[in-house]
Amino acid sequence: ARLNVPGAIRKEGAPEPSTPMAKLIPFVVPALVCLMARPAAAQIKQPGAHPKYSFELEPHLTVEWDGGPAYFGRDGVGLGLRGSIPLFHNGPIDSINNNMAITFGIDWVHFGYDRARACRDFRDFYCDHEFSANAFWLPVALQWNFFVHKRISVFGEAGLAIVHTNWSWARPCPPGSAAPVCEYRVSDTDFLNFVFYPGARFMLSDTVGLTLRIGYPHLTAGASFLF
Picture 1 (cartoon, rainbow, N blue to C red):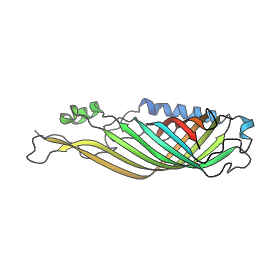
Picture 2 (cartoon, helix red, strand yellow; picture 1 turned 135 degrees about the vertical axis):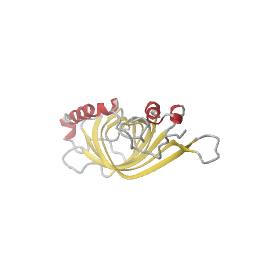
Picture 3 (spheres, rainbow, N blue to C red; picture 1 turned 180 degrees about the vertical axis):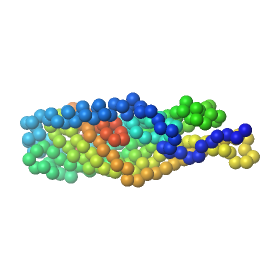
Picture 4 (spheres, helix red, strand yellow; picture 1 turned 90 degrees about the vertical axis):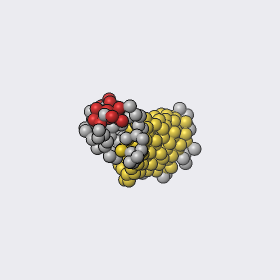
């Protein structure tokens, strides 16, 4: 019998329903914007009244809510690391408490196999085998910080990222093989992917804090260390 084996796929395939994570984004982002719209007036109007640092290191957990190859979960989970270098202590607006930084790093995200969908569409080998997918993001962005409270700052990041994705899949084995279908790995690299991250930083001391991002295409939660 002839097996129905798809070729290399990335984001093709039948449309998938929105995931719970994706449905939360339209509600969570406006909530963050509301938080940003209510700064502590006294702090934001004091130029330079924030910790002076030359480098920020930020390890974090990452959730990718809009990505992954077809037939894999749309919500991926992984780890990331960011480094940020401030361009100046205060500015570019001299009259308020703000600064800008170049931020860069790496995010690794793992996607689980959507066995039910693959089995429904292809059957055979796809019903009793386990596949996996991983994405590696290398973002570089401009970060604009607004220090609205002694312990709270909000920021926006916009930039570009290189994305390398690899995943396991299946295809017919070469003639003479014992099995009709063999597993193989596929990879794909995309350049110049747009990234946008609004977020907030909650400092526990002058050098240690917690950082949250709610953006496209990731949510992150981690620690910040100022040096």
